[in-house]
Image (cartoon, one colour):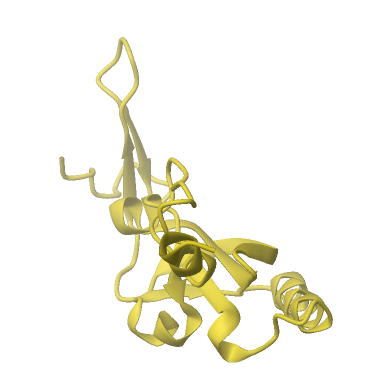
Length: 136
């Protein structure tokens, strides 16, 4: 096995593992605390995550150093998106699990959606005309 193949086998961001559009890089799960996001807001998401960990353990990928995570780019841009967790084994993910993620240090009050042929759409936190407009 080449040195490059050995390096890629231990890193989901290696050159043999192409990034996917809309997603950031993979990080070791040990870095979750510093990643500034929250997830797991419902019992079904918690149950799905526990199932994920059990499946990883059954596959032999349950050691802490095998767990990785990544966020969609929209989490940093808009404050909401998805997080995907994976258990890495022998150069591939044995299993992955995705759930909703939000930024941990701010509240999303307003979204602005650009649309072709119009000036855009404001989605406000308050369902009234008294709600503040989005800042662009």
